[in-house]
Image (tube, helix red, strand yellow):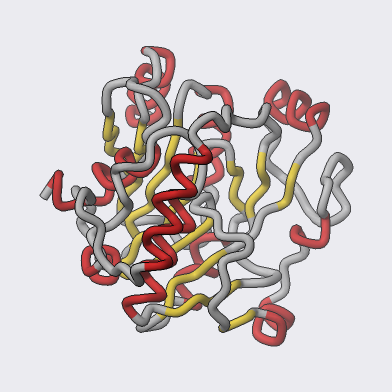
Length: 261
């Protein structure tokens, strides 16, 4: 399977470098890496340029002007230029297990999107990892906050993965879907500005379209570098957009990926 891997980032070049290096380590290489940059400074731009010079991977920098937190629009812009039928989303502070993309591809199934989980690193562990350029982890590594999520087992994944629709734990930092399903609901809603709910609202419309959730356990593992919580000033307004989608059983958003097609 050829995968378009979308990496969302904003002004965190040190973390992004580790993420990109963990992509190089993948058992299954992506067909392309598109970095969805929500307006980072030149440090990120220069890092991407240097990385491209030293890899055979196809790396594309999708950039939009910094006008506040616009993750939904940034992802739409990046996905609009993808070349392949299957899309995997991660954030630029998620170091990937070597089997991460392989696990997503192996579990891809028509009529489903995949929701993965993450293992959280402590603040001290994150400082250590970035300082030492360390991206090798396992379930016994010190500094993991929810280490059970770091246990990789194909056998247990088959048993404990959940094919059921629910909204708890929706995260676009570890998600995959067929591009045709994404386009059928017009992608993410560009009206989301500021942190919160753009991922949940997207999934509500997938459910309304008849696309179901497969929550992977013990597979598609990633390690989340610590960061301070994002500003939540826009949460009430974003909650209202989400409620409207739920109450009106909406499938398509008015302002979505079609802006870039």
